[in-house]
Length: 154
Image (tube, rainbow, N blue to C red; front, side, top):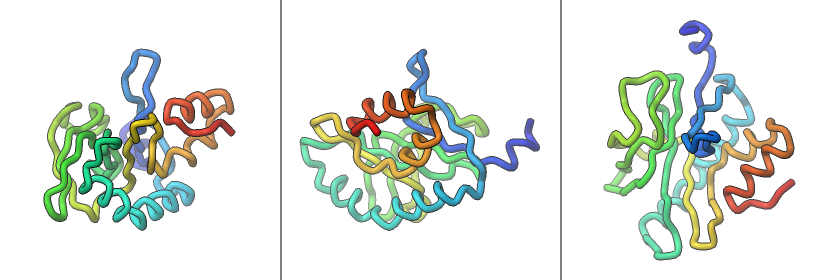
C-alpha cells in the first residue's frame, strides 16, 4: 500500500462523509486537469488575499490547500494572514503525517495550491479543484456536492 500511495497525490476536499467527517480523494500525481486548477488558483491568489485582508462581514470560512507532505494536499481552515504566510488549522487528520485535525500550521503564499471562502448567501468561491473532481463523479453525487457549495447543478 505504501508503494502504491507513492504514485498518487492525495487531494483532501471539504466534502463530508455520511458520518460528517471530511473525506480524502485520491488522484494521479500528474493529473493535468488538477494541475491546471492549481495554476488557476495560484494565478488568482491575489483575489483571495484581497477578500481575506478586507475581512468583510459578508465573507468567511477562509481556507487554503497546500502540500503538507509530497503526496498529500490538505485544507487549512480559519486562516489569518501575516505578511507572506497564512496560519490556520488542519481541516482533517492527514493520512500520511503525524499531524492531527485542528493542528495549527503556517503556509507560505507560494505553497498554496487552492483557496476558497464563503459568502453570507452560502455560496463558495474559489475551490478550483472541485469542478474537476465533481466532473468525475456520478451526476447525482456531483450535483449534491455542488448544492452544498451553493453552486448550480449541471
